[in-house]
Length: 387
Image 1 (tube, rainbow, N blue to C red):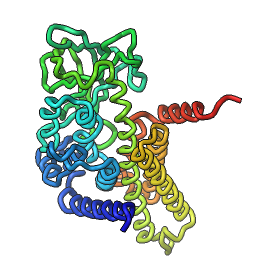
Image 2: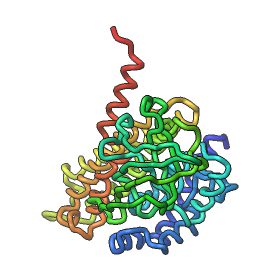
Image 3: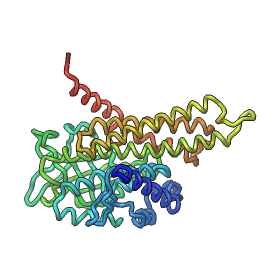
Image 4: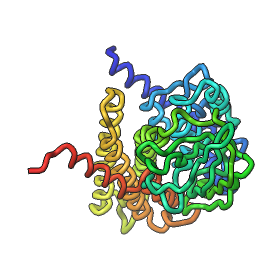
């Protein structure tokens, strides 16, 4: 068996193992998230026992040391049950954890990485502000150097699961003259900390466990030892991880879309109207065909971007294409699934309706569709000279 075939076999085995674990021990999680509006301690314990926390963190720190491709596969499988489950995994293996693993000091790694793997800590990533998000040049949160460290002042908002995190990666301006071009630094801030206040927590239109928080920083002292990596490199660290984050989102959308197509095809064959199965209707067949085709296209884009990253080739545009297409594709598939299920698809208790609401959020997170199109177009214009 060659290396490629071996890898396919290993990934297939991983997929089957994850699916068995999810079906066996996590089937009640969507209902529990709706009831409690959060990830309960029992849910976190299950994630930990199944080895799903810190899966990309290296084994010496207690993680599984998974590749990006394997990580995306796990997220794809979790999304079949609920896309929101992926947030728990991302909080221990996503943007902030990987930045700590790659750029953190040995002391920072010792302090945070083991706790991300054993279920005692989660991270959040604090970039977005009332006047800035995708436009890092608009950041207003500042870090002012003081004796022994820095004081952070500013407001962050729409921060995913900040109310459930124990450490926050905060992006702040350390050099106003340079801003996104070397003037933004990353800081690791413990929650709670003096001067840090979670001033507001909002629910989204999706599953109640997906919260977005506003965080007020008022003279929050951060020791020099809590600067992540080099001063002025914060924005580059964030962009480095965002390509992987976009493939994470694309994979979540792919998994959810596959589940929706399976449910739609099963329902179309079991439900009859006017004496014949729904599946015999051309209108329904075309919906299923369109969904299957778009799912295959998204899978190809994700694979291409993963191949590029593994080959060490710049993959920014490829990751943006995958995220853009997969997130919009999944919402179209969800819309068709609702239509095929009819009234059963729009019930508040319907898992189809829950997927529809949850998937709408992924067209915004990790860079909205409009930002992805801007990045893709920029790449095209850079590659093709003016005539």
